[in-house]
Length: 395
Image (cartoon, rainbow, N blue to C red; front, side):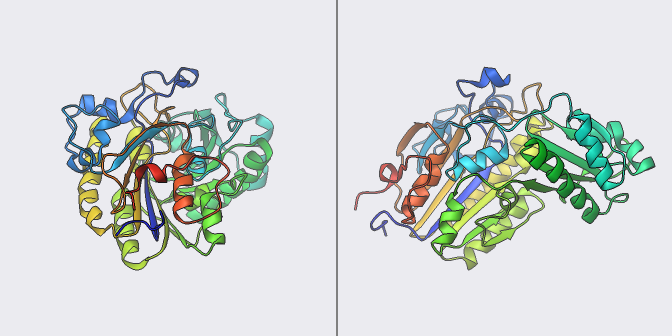
C-alpha cells in the first residue's frame, strides 16, 4: 500500500532527547563548538546499533565503518530558533519557532524573585546557583534533610529546577512549589520551564527519581498537536511531551519512568491506536547519561534502544509514517554537563517511504512537523517546509 494521495493514518515520532549529530554553525556562540553527541560517543565506544545503521543513521553522522544502504529516508535538521532546550526543540518540531531565546540566569535568579518565592511557599530555600543536578544534591542534600528547605538551581538553559528528598517533601508539595515558581519565575521573569527534581538516598549516594515533572508555558502559536486535535485526529504523548506543551493539544498523555518504559508504552499504544499522532520522548539519553557525562552509559542506552527498535519496526503498518529525531544535543564527551547546540537526525520509515531518500540538511526542525501536517491533510503550520514529496514513493 502507498500513501494515496500522500496521506497516512498514523504518524509515530520518537524523540531521542539530546541525541545531536554535530555542532550547528552558530555553536561557538553557545560554547558548543566541536559538540557531536552521537558521533563523539561512537568515537569513544564501538556502537552495536545495526537497526539504526540500516535505517541510515551512519549517513547522517560518522559512526565508523562503511554505512550500509539505507532502508529509510535520512537527513539532519538545524534548529532555527535560538537556544538549545527541550521546550524550544519540541515546539519547533511541531511548527513553532522562537525569535528570541528564553532568558538564562548563569548567576542565579534575582534575590527579589527568590524572596517572593520563599514567602509564598513559607520556607527558605537553598542554592540559587547554576549547577549540575547530581552535584547540587550532594552539595546541599544534608542541609535540605536538616531544614526541609528545597534546593533551587538553574543551568545553561532557561530552567528553574527544584530538588527535594521524597522523605522530606511529599511529591504533591514539591509540585505545588513548582507551580508557585512558575508563577514567580515563569510568568514573572520569562523562565522557560520549572522542573521538579525529587531524589532519594543518603549523603554520598543520593539519586534522582522518575517522579520528575516539567511545568512549561504553552507555545505562542498553534502547533501540530493543536491542529491535529482540532481536526479530530487524536494525539497521544509518551514521556514528558505533554508537559512541554502545557497539556495543550494532547488527547492522552502517558508518563513513563524510563526509556524502556517509554518503548513499552509505545508498543501498547500501537496495539490500541489505529489513527492519530503518537509523539514519544525518551529522556534518559539526556537526563541519565548526557547531563552526567556518562559515555559508556549513553552508548549502552543507544544499543538498548536499537534492540527495541528492531522489535518495533515490524509493528509499523501500511499507512504509517515513522520518524526518529531529537530536540537538541547533549554531548557526554565534552566537559560541559549542559545541552549542546547541534543538528538533529531525522530518519523516516514506512511502507510508502522511498528507501534511501536523502533529505540533506533541513533549515528547521519544523520541516518534520510540516511534513506530518501535510500527510494528515491539515492546514499548513506556521513554520516549516514539508518534505513529504521527497520521501513518498511515486503513485
